[in-house]
Length: 376
Image (cartoon, rainbow, N blue to C red; front, side, top):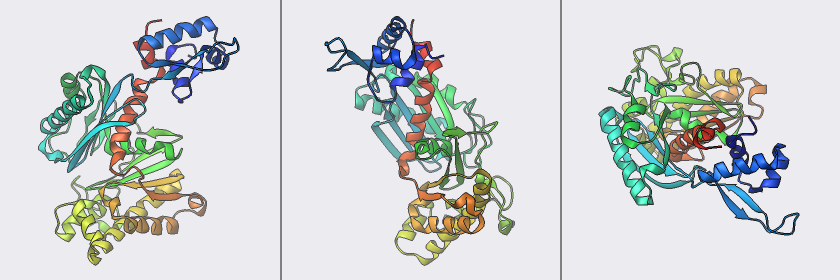
């Protein structure tokens, strides 16, 4: 409803300060109603008063602006081999962050324990307490049922299947917790770039986040975009960690490339590419072609305006992108590729924490959620 405090806050979130009169004119609400809603939002510090220099009565009128420092958000991007945690304001601007090499295979209590410890360090560093937190967003490198926040049979996450991440973390952090697939939160981090977008993460595994009409598309159970387990006919002899044969991830993921090159992981593969290793460059280019073969069908079906490549293997630069582009532009329909842009993520390793923060912010600042926090 347009006459609620939450609806009024949604208007002010565009960054433009407005007076009571301007808000009344914009919404069609009575000035008395506007005054009540403004007072309710001021009481919870969702907005702050500013002074304007002009008004129809000759005296400066008070304008009100969204208070991006009203609360803080914790955002965590947990990958297969490394993790990043950040604190942000309500615009998603980073206040402090930490990253570390951390194996997801250590199990949920060890990894989430590190997250919790790091969160407390960041709160102390920025002069905040857990009382300032409005929510924690977590991205996990595997299938997640978003409604419950549970990882479901994640092939790269031993010990995490069905573990109650939201409840475990919320009980210890004192703030609500939202959990999603890591690729979905990365897509959210880039979602302002296009209304129809695919974010493809190529790390140890491969996944895809789908933005349709400006909104994240999770599917019925949260499994949308799991392209790493689409079958490649040419790879029927290769066993995937999921138990099937011929999965894209099993031949084109960073883990597969690292094994072929005899190195520890995806970052080492990128290091070899940067050092000019012909074998590494050829493998990364072929990985791009294999990924492009799967994406070509998705381009025909979904018709995105933008494909963003992210994850550690995307740090190999144009070698991966060239392979992806080569096959998509050759196999997708001309109309679907007429204005299609394929590029590397501009957020880089910040995409995950940026998207995790966006997930929490949009949840907390939804009009219905804001209405629950105020007294009218």
